[in-house]
Length: 146
Length: 146
DNA sequence: CTTGAAAAGAGCACGAC
DNA sequence: GTCGTGCTCTTTTCAAG
Image (tube, rainbow over all chains, first blue to last red; front, top):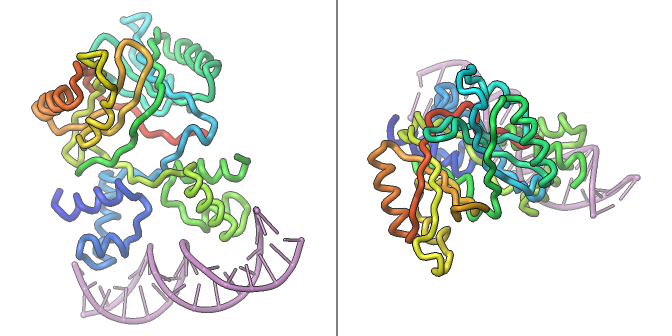
């Protein structure tokens, strides 16, 4: 991918609502040239979508945790992501190298909600869990330096 | 926060570029009412910003890892986040309960870049690191179910 | 990639509730 | 205080070169 596309991606990663007019100014291209490039980046999947960044404390989800999971039965088929996708409290699911098989990032409203979620995770995917509670997050969702 | 604001936040979390017109249709409000609510949500910090979601494989950052850090000198002042913020490869920094003090999520181009980054982290914050490499991510950045 | 025009949306003032 | 109307200006989209 070339220089101008990288610039566009970086700008939109930092401000997902930047207008095409501003993108054009920043890149020195015409508005419609920028427009075409953005559409192409979206179509190619370089830009997968746009999101508002939400303050989770303000929307009733003040408790974040990382949940590492390990299958109870190592011989069973590993379809944990499909079994967990319906749980909306799980923000992300990463397959990882190491002792455990996946790391999940979850958002809940209270310790009680976390307890219930962990039970749901264990039941849905037949896994054991190890949970690391987030106390505070100095920074998060920083845009990539493309 | 009340029902309609929650809807607006959820809609924008799922599609950060949704127009005010569409938000108005979805919420049953007028365009200007939606407009005012969004501006208020932004001002109050409920909506912290907007971002394009980028495919990191496509922009030369195919390697993701979680790096847990622990101070070498437990008596030293804990200003790790401030010492690490300048490293653009660190996407997020969470203070956590448990054996280690912070969990970082990092994005780099190659194993060699990861090695260099870990050295920079250790040097900048005087910490030991434990790294868990991400092999694949079944899902990520899912919008909160506000 | 650019230009230029049409369509759609954003921003703002004002009045109604 | 919140919400809706109507106006203007900006942004987005599309077609042609």
